[in-house]
Image 1: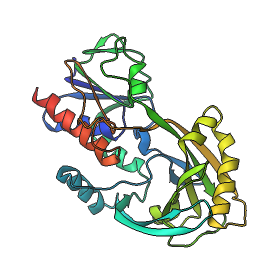
Image 2 (image 1 turned 60 degrees about the horizontal axis):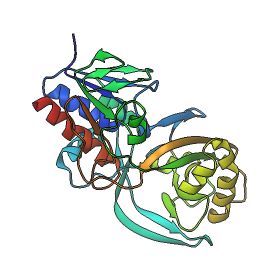
Image 3 (image 1 turned 60 degrees about the vertical axis):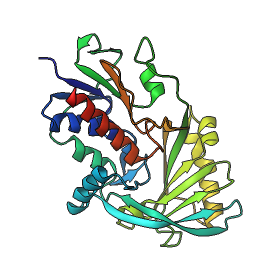
Image 4 (image 1 turned 30 degrees about the horizontal axis):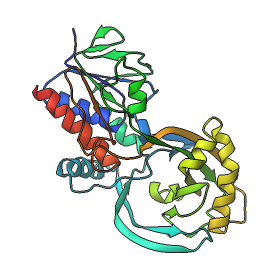
Length: 309
């Protein structure tokens, strides 16, 4: 029996879309190429603990529906307020504290939130879809098809791209672990200005709440492009820049790199999603600003429209 909706992509936008369809009483099937859902909410287990490699945090914003989801996560211990204060670090290592919106994190890693959204859904993991067309996935009937992924990835799956090409930026996430914390306990996270190699760093033990001496550093887009075909080559420059900017004398005892070829859209469309008969798109490029909450809202809004139609 053909389902009403097939969602290709098990990140937060695809899962939000699928839940909205299911909650409206329609049938939905999610296909994801990863071993587990999560997309750019990815966490990897390193040295026995989950480390957030994709999104660094999320902000609730003024979306009441997303706020209700976050409140449920908080009540069940899946998400927690992290910090409203980051540093801005200049090329010489000087730091300025800046207060902004509350950033939220997940004690078990952000992937745990995606797994929670996937609970009870019909999710097929480990399948790489090769071709999609309106109402069809790999030649089979699939109901309404949703591509919940960056546009450049979606473009590879279709014969005729349904939307204009979108520009996306790459990032390499580098995990650095020491035997003990080498930076102030109130660092939380920092935006780095004017450095050719790193753009942002987060105290992963602080945001997870377990105090582990682990930093996750995101490269600049230019650095990611330089090392896109060999992500491990980014580790050396990132270690050097991190130690210099934070005044760390010791070398990390363990390092790891993860490539995100399509980490974030260079600009967003302003529209909540793309909808056409039989083939639609959603994600964090379909909104006012690229963010976790944008991805969730895009998928949720599209799922409601598909269920109603």
